[in-house]
Image 1: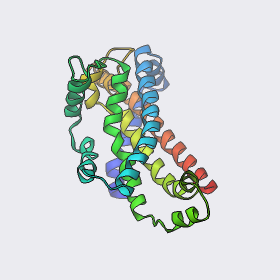
Image 2: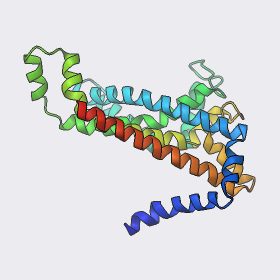
Image 3: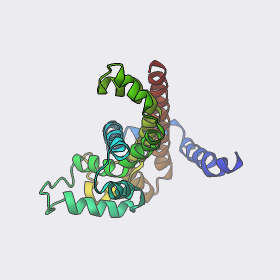
Length: 247
């Protein structure tokens, strides 16, 4: 508990104390700032969308890696972890080279909100894959075979037998994905362009406050994001518990 306090509780408490030092006026001035509000909105909405996509695609990728046999499977299994190991600024450079102006795909999405979505999706995809994959590897197929022998279709077997077992892992990965998404910085700096009121995310906006010497305002933004992350994790936990009970 002492180690947990030193690493987590005390730093988080210090942020809240710093933000509350200026009273409610600090939060009001920060949140009513149009540029700050738009950055918060873009970050949260985009992270929610990316998390929903990761819950679906991450589960599919985990299923393919565990249940299917194909050439290059081991290589793909290693590549999934690259967003974990790659420095985020390098990830931004890679994405800019691929999706930016003059890239081989001809998409030219840099300096757009699509770029924000792609960058966050890139760095958060492994979370759902790596939380679902071990659960699938430990699952026995006997129950699925029994359901099939009783006439259940593959979809029914997945919905009634497999999915209830995977739900806790899927939502755990979703919580990690969302928390990483709202805090992402490095991969967005180059690709998004940090355009005020358009592609500027919360982490960049927070850095602007710090560079301007407004530590109280920066702490207020950090506190808001802390509350958002807590509420999101709590909501995902409640949803997965209810779905697990129904399953």
